[in-house]
Amino acid sequence: MARIAILSTVNFKHMTVLTLYTDFLDRNEIPYDVIYIDKYGESEENNAVDTYSYQLSINREWNFLRKLRRYYGFHSFAKKIIKGKDYDFLIVWNSFTAIMFIDLLVLKFKGKYAFNIRDYNFEKIPFVYFLMKLIIKKSSFTTISSYGFKKFLPKHEYLSIHSFNENILLNIEPRENMSRKSLPIRISFIGYVRFFENDKKLIDLLGNDNRFIVQFFGEGAQYLKEYAEDNNYKNVICVGRFKPSDTSSFLAITDIVNNLYGYGKIELDTAISIKSYYAAYLNIPILVFKDTYMEEATRGFNFICDLESQSFPDDLYNWYTSINHDMLKLNCNQYLVEAKQENTYFKSILEKTIDCKEE
Image (tube, one colour):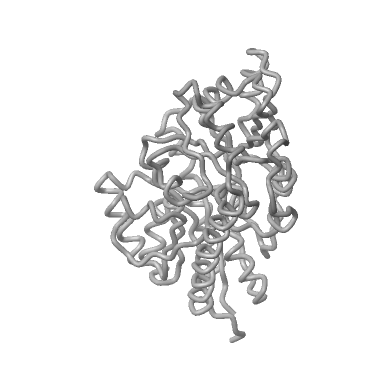
């Protein structure tokens, strides 16, 4: 039986689509360990045989080099465990992790690791591009979460995977219709809140407009709560850090998914968000920015936002109340069908790669 380890520089809650791997491993009764950086000091549920967490506290005010030195303490911590446990296969989460362990991967685990690319990682810098090309070439297979990443990644046969958290989605019912007279319209951002300037613009545009409730759920929302209170906005709801299991309850009180991270930077323009699957599953619209891959990917159930326009509230309201919901549902379904087909193909590759039988 294969001995597997998941290696990551982020907490479980930030390892989106990890369940594609863990569900497969659990179903085939393949034991696995997790070696990761824990930034929150929280116990996170998982089915790993052994969980090795490296406690790390980072101050936002530190410069890049100081942060990098703290992260690299994880390198010796993890390598010692990997050497002692003699794993057959590694699942490497994100580009930063892969580059940190490039010596181990290309020398000791050539063809024996899966590389999961989650976002842009300075590939426009020639040296980083070279390292990424080497890591990808030596992997058993490499996955991407967005076709937009092909704009900055080396040419390669990538596997596309999609973030369906069925444990969350199965607890909520897709919307079969939209109540035109149901006001206010609830707009929700669910996740790590960090693009405060765009968030404040949205709050300013919709603040105290009784047609809308603006909701932010996730770490960082506490700062927007202060902003809303300082400006006496009564229709802004902010909830800070929450358990992943709470996501379903937040989606249940959502009419439009807010995906306004930002734009104009390659890491933002090329990414696709887990929020797109939430919106598609629920048959509800999603807010996106123009000229992003999210605009392209969610065409047919998105609203393209211009937060510099004073007519934005009226434009959004008029668009929402005139949606052809049958057509929106059709587009959402097509989005999910294509994503599920690609996930099925990924699972077939995973099954061929990892030995599921007793030796």
